[in-house]
Length: 75
Image 1: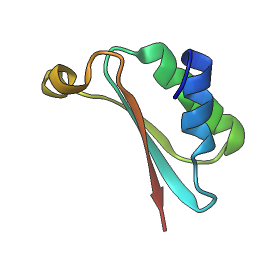
Image 2: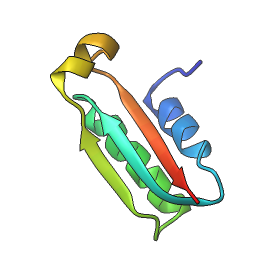
Image 3: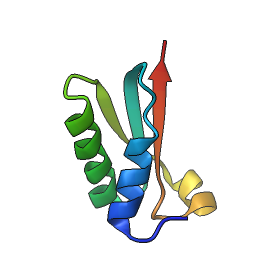
Image 4: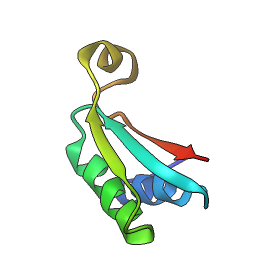
């Protein structure tokens, strides 16, 4: 369970595996948290390619407007 934006950012960035080759951050209308996760990942791994992707309205109906997720691509 997370409480507050900073806790969400910390928990999402702490889950990054050591062998991560790329990260994709998906979000819906929650740009501040998505950018916070981006910055946290860049601090941990400055050369890691990270993509920010805004998800569409169909997904928003199911998960809500505050949705932020991170996909870690490994070898």
